[in-house]
Structures are given as C-alpha cells and as structure tokens.
Image (cartoon, rainbow, N blue to C red; front, side, top):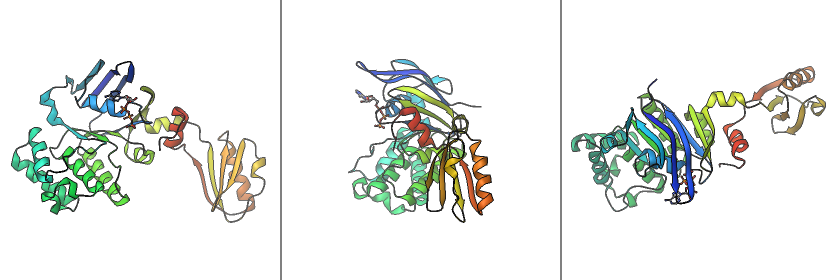
Length: 301
Ligand SMILES: Nc1ncnc2c1ncn2[C@@H]1O[C@H](COP(=O)(O)OP(=O)(O)OP(=O)(O)O)[C@@H](O)[C@H]1O
C-alpha cells in the first residue's frame, strides 16, 4: 500500500495551549480519510500543518517519505473552511494564477479551469468576480481552486458547508472520482453521514487528543448493536417483557426497540412472527454519530 501522506506524533502548541497532541495517521493513495472532532478539537490546525502553513512543534509530516518543501506544494490542494478566494478578482484570473503558482502552465490551467466550470455546469462564471456569486457557488469555485492543478493530496475543511443538497451530491460525486483516480483526500466535517458515505479510515480528535482511530467498518463492529427496528402489519404486545429489552418506542411504521444484548433480537423477531406479518426487521449498527457522542460526550452536529 502506498501512503503518500504520513503524520507521526505531530504536536502543535499555541503558547500554553496544546492545539494538537501527538497525532499520527496515514492517508493512502486513493483514499478519503476523515478527520472528525467537535469545535476546537484541532482539525484545522492539523490540516494547516499538513499544508505547511504552520509548523509542528514536534513529530514529523512526510509526503512520499520527504518532509514538506516548496517543491511539494504543487502536489497539494486546499479547500479551506473559510472562503479563501479574493472577492474582487475574476474567477479565471485567480484560479489560473493559483494553478500557475503550483506548477501548471497558463494554457493547461485555463483548460483545466474550463473543464471544471463545464463539469459544474457554470461556464459563464469564467468572467465573473467571486463577490458576484452566491455563497454556495463561491464554495464550488473554492473547490475548483483546490483541484485545478491536479494535486495528489487534497485537504478539505468542511467542503460541503453552505451547499444545497443538489450541489452536495455533485461535489460528493466529484470527490469520489478524485479518489478513484488515486488522489489522497484528508477530509474534515461535522456531518457524520458524509463520513459514513465517503471515508474508509477516520480519526476522532477531542480537545487535541486522538480518542478513536481506524477503519470505519472495523470500528463499527467493535460497538454493540443496541437497536432493533421492527415494522409489522399490526401491533405486537408484550415486547417490553422480553429479556434484555430496555425500551420500546412506537414509531409510524412499527417499533424501535433498545436492547442490552443482541440475542434479544431473535426473541423479538420470533414473537412478532407468531402474532403478525413482519414487514421489516433490522438489527441496527450504531451510527457514527452515536459512536462520536459516546467517545466525545457531546454532539458533533
Ligand atoms: N493561531 C492560533 N492561536 C492560538 N490558538 C489557536 C490558534 N489556532 C487555533 N487555536 C486553538 O487551537 C485549538 C484547535 O483549533 P482548531 O481550529 O484546529 O479546531 P477545529 O477542530 O478545526 O475546530 P472547528 O470545528 O471549530 O473548526 C482551539 O482551542 C483554538 O482556539
């Protein structure tokens, strides 16, 4: 496996304050890696260190085995959380300028920008100033600025914030395409459903510390399954009396049942089938949001 981006025990202090405490992670080629944490956990600081915008006080960051250097800048693309483009400058002028800074020729940059504007179905933005665009469309231009020079590593801080659902889908599809082309993507968000859909590996930071790290599927397997969904044609009485059933909640289409032992699920199913037709039965995996709340003790939404 190729790991173009490796962080080893990276530390960042701001005076007395530790913003990032010994974070280690590796992002593979063709992987979207999720960096999660509540406000102030250290995500943006980590990303800014990866980009060489600020320097770690300890540990090491390497790209294909090399430390950060100007010559590596063209390998990287950055979509910051706060808008990073100049409001008064034309889309084409600044995106082509940024691409050239990262090693592209003017004609290549122009071609790539036009490709992306077509891809997002907004070729007319070429001559518009950033301030003339809506917030969501400015975000799209920020995305183009991050990927126009075909970087190998893309850092995205809250990439989908401010976008409507149609544009979130569009950008998600684009991020998946970049992944499939071998790009390594370090992705931070508060939206757990995006992480569930996109990320293979994750790190959850809490007050500068790594509290959970690893493959998302494996992490999920480690957490007990504590909820059963049961949709039935008619009512099922006595679910509360089943051993290890903690709580039964009536929902529009049936029941959500909290259990303390997964074995209770089979008893629930048997009991329901004895008395009615079962339309849907599911032992739910914990959602990433539930795992996050367990680990961090507060909602990340
Ligand atoms: N330049 C700075 N000077 C002093 N403290 C800073 C600086 N940048 C960040 N911090 C502090 O470091 C901690 C981590 O901040 P960071 O922005 O990395 O968090 P985050 O996880 O990105 O949060 P959010 O989800 O709110 O964007 C915070 O306590 C923050 O106040």
